[in-house]
Structures are given as structure tokens and as C-alpha cells.
Length: 531
RNA sequence: GGCCCCGUCGUCUAGUUAGGCCUAGGACACCGGAUUUUCGAUCCGAUAACAGGGGUUCAAAUCCCCUCGGGGUCACCA
Image (cartoon, rainbow, N blue to C red):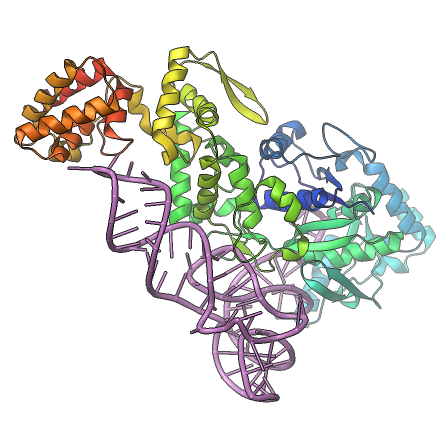
């Protein structure tokens, strides 16, 4: 049997990080078994522009490198893969159930059903469908239909049954059909409900494993009953826990964003995003928050980092392995290693995986990732081509710029965790620098320091070739002559040339800033300090 | 409230199916130290958990019972 899994998002205009993990587990299970992964679009209930709403979802899959074997853009043997285009299938199935007496037309009004519900609640018993429409004769039903009386199709729950599944993750789970209300399967307007459409599609598309979030566990008895009524082979189920809010246990939700900001590591990520997006012209764009996959792409994460983080959120191999490439994951992933309890989303851990995968990159690869940010922030010139799936290839960058960025990225080393981190050192690209006031006062505007700086300036101005080694030995010997600790000058030099007390080695910084600008900046610092 | 799921360091988890190798292991974060005359990275170290209560057993995180807690879901949403 070929394993066939599916992920069935509804096109909402964004890709939720929790949904992405569900998709990943589906994809991995299919790939692990040499099976087929299907993308199916649940747009039964869709008014808006599908293309626009689907875009970010496909974009996320492409970015992460999770390809689908059947679905949008490529079709497949069970096309169409949009539920909105599969109406015939649902209607036919509903008609069949109706004919076989396994479903019925329900003419009861909403008010009446609400009332039944309230009554049941008041009497502390489980609400069950009253099934009044079942009393209607065929002629009465035909007359009502002819008269255009609104009605829905309900599935007639076989109340004498117990439903048992053997879930890959939860084990044996059991329900009593005698406690279930008759679910609506077709709306008054003839469109199907989710629980029905899913069953039809899963069966027709030959899905073998339904891997989905735990919140669907309560939909399962209805779907099992429906499958049985239709005579389908039951798929296997695996209900994975949902992804929980940072530091909490509730389901991660985009609506509670403001609340998550109380979490320190979540806030850190949000702030990072705010800062980056304001520099590259994406400020305030909807859907760019850490609940959404696109956030990570736009802020400069690596697919490998996100994939690794998502994988470890609710799955583990053993007691020590943390790092997995996608290829590793395909080899090693099994459903029985999925954890049962919901996993809180931890931005810090995400960043730490990211850090690891970034450290695996060559300087050239890092440069390629950083360039789009520099261009978009207007720090260098170049042309960014926005190809989906490989966002932000930069072309037409002048040689000397490329050279410079390469030297910079090499000097920055593992200070670059996200590609957008390169924006933190904008002072290497600008003529004007901004002093960190406190540091300037502490390190430069102090008795004797300007004079020391001035002396060193003269030495290096006369130096024929600037190298890390030359600059360093000149500084050391000069300080020795002056009877000053080298640290005093080193700090003063750093603040004078970059303005800030952080960054690569001070001589690297000097070389990066360049001869003319360094000399000018030292002069400016001396002037500033002696005012 | 009904039905269902889940409970191991702050967080992600290993260990639970087959009780002893668990004075509960790893990772992230935090804290301390070394190193780097900055920052980061790195290395070393520390703190830190079996929800509670009963049982069964020579032995319980693991098996049984009860309690408590958290969550999901109860639509002509998906």
C-alpha cells in the first residue's frame, strides 16, 4: 500500500506556523514511506479572491522546500483539488445517502433546534436531534421541496453504535454514537459542510493516513460514521497535539498576538521584526508576525532552521539528537515518536536552531542572503528580483560593493544569525555615524584620550599599508611609548570609527570603514571630545 | 456543563507499551566562570522537574484507584 497523506488548508491569506507543522508531519510521513503528499484546498466557504488568499500558503511551502505531488498548480489524478470545484461529488454522495435512508432532509428551523438544545441543557441531558422531519411522508417532503421550503441534509446517526479508532498517537479512542446529534452534511444552499466534504475527498483521493491537529479529534467519530455509511475503507488516523502559545497551554492563535508580547522571547522576535520591516519597507504589513510563516522568511530565517524547530516541536528521535536536516527527518520520522501533549512555541529555541544552520553556511551563501536586505534598506545599489520560493536574489551589484559586503560578512562571522542582522551594522555603509553618547563620554571625551587618538592617527596616516597586523602593532608600541594601557586607545578608536561599543575586532572595523573615512572620523571625534 | 484529550526542570523533551540500568538524561533560556581589552561565538560549571493522595510490589516516573489541574470540542466555521 502506498502511503498517501494530505494537508488541507483553507485559503485565509496567511500560513499559520502551527498549520505548517501539521503539514510538515504529513509531508515527512509521506516521504518517509516513499508515498504521496497531497495539497487540497478547503475553500467551501470562500468569498474572497482565492489566488490572493492562497498565495502566502503556497509561498510558505515553496520557501521551506516542501513540495506536493498533487494539488494546486500541478493537478493530479484526483483533480480538482479545490473543494469549491468538487460540488458534484458531494451532491452525488449526499443523494446516495438520502436514497439509502442514511441521511434525511431536515426542515426544522434554527429556532426550533436552538430551543431543543436549551431544553436538553436545562434537563441536563445530552442534546440529540429530535428528527421530526423523519415523520414526514414522501409526498409531504416533495411538496415542501416544491414549495421551496428551506432545508438541510442531515446524516442519520446510527445511535446503537460505538465508534473506536486506533489512533497512531493517542492509541484507542472510543465514542458512543448514542450521544451524537445528527450532523448537517449539506447546507440549505446545497454546499457541503467540512466534515462531509473531508470524508468524500479523503476517500476519493485514497488518503491512507489522516495526520491532523488534535482539535479535529472530536470530528473523527462523525467522519468515521460517514465513511462507514458510504462503504469506504477507513483511513488511519494520527492526531497530533496543537502548537501552544509561548509559555502557555492554549492553542497558538493570531488573535492573541498582543498577549504573547508579554512573553520575553516572543517580544524580542516581534521587536526584531518591527525594526527590520520598518527599514525594508514592510512596516505594518498584515500577517507579518511570529505566528505566521512568512514572518520568518521576511526577517531572514533559513528554511533549515524553521524546519528543524518545527520538527522538534512535538517530535523527538531519542534523548539527545536535536539537529536534523530535512533529509535526516525524512529518514527518521515516525508517527509513534510524536509527543502527546501540546508543545508551547518557544521563539528562543527557534532562534537557536536558526543559529546552528546559519553557522553551516559559507560566506558566499550568507552574502547572498544579506544582499536583499541591504538593497531594500537603500544601503547599497542593486536590483532585487522577487522570485517566489527563492525570495530576493540580488543582481547588478557593483563589484566593489559585492567585495565589500563579502569582507563585512566574513568579519561579522556568527554575529549574523538572521540575514537581516546585517542591517544592525548600517554604520559601515553610511558617511555619517551616530555616537553612542554614554560610550563616547566614557571612552573618548576623557582627559588625555583625544591627544592619544591624535598621535595614533598621525602614525597610521603615515603607514603605507593598512593591515590588521600593522594597525595592531602600531597601536601597541605607541601606547607603550606613551605609557598608556592599550585598552584606552582601542576603545576610543572603536567608538570614533563606528560610534558603538560592539562589533567585529577593532582593526577589522578600521579596515572596513576605510582609510579616508577613518582618518576623518578620528578628527571628528577629537573635535567633538574637546568642545 | 456533556464528550474527548493531556499532565516529567521556566521551555522543548528522554524515560511509561515489556517496573529495577533513573540518587530522572539531553537541549534551549537563565545565572556564574574562562576566553575575547568590545559585542557575539566558544569552552567549563551551577540552579532546576516525575501535579497530589492512596494502593500493588523486595522495588513505581513507569502498573491500579481516586482527586486536582490544563486543554480541545460541542455551528447551515474549517
